[in-house]
Length: 256
Image (tube, rainbow, N blue to C red):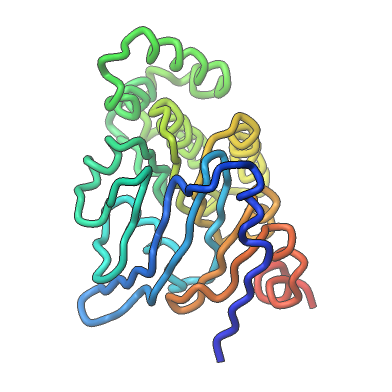
C-alpha cells in the first residue's frame, strides 16, 4: 500500500510569498506504452531549494525533464511564473528564465571553457557588459576554471566538468535552476565541493529544483523535499522533518 506523508509542506508560505514560482500539477508522463509518472504534483517558491529524491526508475529525472520540455506530459499542467510550459520547446522554456545543469554535465567538449560559459549566457547576449562582469565573478568563484579558460572542455576532469556545468547555468542568471544528479560519479571530496557551490547559491537566494540520489546531502541543502517511488509522490514535507522520518532514514539514509 502506498503511504503519503505530508509534513509542514506549507511552511514556506510564512515568508509572505503565497504564489509558487513553479507548479507541477497532477502530471502523467508516458514513454510509449510505459507510464513513468502518475499524477505527480509539486511546487517551488521563489528563493527556495526543493529536492526530488528516489531510487532508480522512481521518476525523479523524468519530473525534471518535464519541466524543461524534454518530455511532454500526457496529462496535467506545468506552470512557471504564471506561464504554462507543457508543449513548449526546451529553448522557449529556457527563455522564460530557467537554467539546467543536466545529468552527465552535457558540456560542449570541443569548445573551450570560456566558450561554454558564453553558451550559458547566450539568452543574455544583448547584455554584453553585464555578462562580462558575471564571467569575472564566475572565474573568481571557480579559480580552476579561470586557469583552464582556454582549454577544451572535453579535456577537463569529471569534477571540473561539473564545476563548468554549474558555472554555465549560473551565468544564465536564471530565476530557477534545475539540477539533475550533481553528485553522480564524483568522489566524496568533489561532492563536497559541488555542494559548497549550491549552499552558496542558496544563501544568495537562488531558487533551485534539485534531483538527487544522495538523499543525505540533498536534505541538508533543501528547504522541502519530495520522495518518488515508481512514478508516484510517496512522501513530501520539510527537509529536516523528512530526514528524521524513520522510513526515509531506513530507505535513503542508511539507518538500521
